[in-house]
Image (tube, rainbow, N blue to C red; front, side):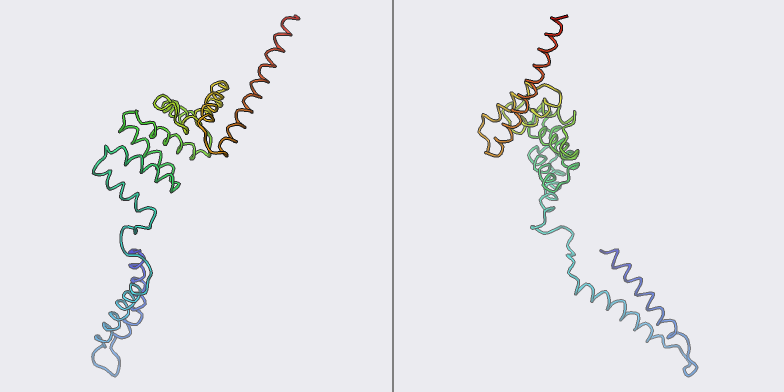
Length: 227
């Protein structure tokens, strides 16, 4: 905004020059140019336009946003972490704040810092980093995110979010038995009804795949026996 004002002031000065030059030239009826009138016009136009803009503009001239701004907690956390870079909870809060703001790459960095601070022993840091990576890649569970989830499950085997993502990762690897076990464990925890519906649907789909796979194996065995 300061750049805008400077640019606007420059344009005003150029406009003033169009008035200024004729005034400072000697007129045939005067021995000296109208210097004071020219300077007065310059000060009035440039200073007056800047003053009017500052008075009537609704722009907030404070550097930091107000309390109601969603970035304000983030700026406070960043300032806190500059002074206390080993604060694990603050890194986790920063990562969650970035997720809320849909700044997923920044969330990955924040959760990664949390993982480093915790020396790899924070399941929330691992889960948060994996989730942010999944959100970046449009809900596809990549290998790196899957490895983070597996590490989180070692630390917190009963974490609902880690179990859900871990089941999805097991399905991606083709480990249907492990995926079913994780979905079933999550279902036994009594999640909300809508989540239960999703879990039951996933378990049914896994059962169908396992049955089809078993049927193919039986068919191949029968063919081999007849041969």
